[in-house]
Image 1 (cartoon, one colour):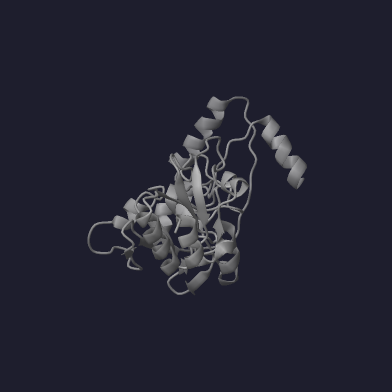
Image 2 (tube, rainbow, N blue to C red; image 1 turned 60 degrees about the horizontal axis):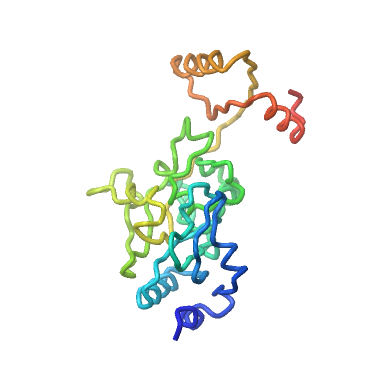
Length: 264
């Protein structure tokens, strides 16, 4: 049988995409580059990912894991005909441990949805890329995503304690764990930012952050970039680390004001 037929047997025909238009959709991410897609599959469990990897190996097809496709660097774009493994069905928040401020989540969980899920506990997931309302935790792990709040809280690698992933041989591994300083090599840190080249992440143990008791937003106006940069350096040198800092020019300030009507 063809690879597509084998995938349909494993997952069901509705979770295997072979139509040219469907493959075209998955041939690019949020950037400008495109690549050839042989077939798109939508596994829903780690066991199904293992099955997908086995079928791809038998047919000699490379695999490209994909989250929401919001990246701009081409990490989810194949360079030759490949199986695109879309992980958006794996979108469950499996377990939230309020006491330890951690959560096991699927790679398809939307970044902002995780913070909404944990808000009732006074917790949130700190990394906040600009696409946080659409991007997935799995994609954040693949790219070591950042965001404005990473100035104070750090990028994704600081907030991932462990990953479960399926290797190219179909083996399921758990790298890292809930301990803050696990014994041995930090293979979890190697996986974060590896763009899916070391395996397909099927679960992530994330660190959650307590909500701040209060927040204030300030808009400071400067005549030139040098003055703005000097002020940022002075603030941080004084030992004050803001939750977020962002530089905006006049057109961006106007666009934000038109959207939120903050009175600036």
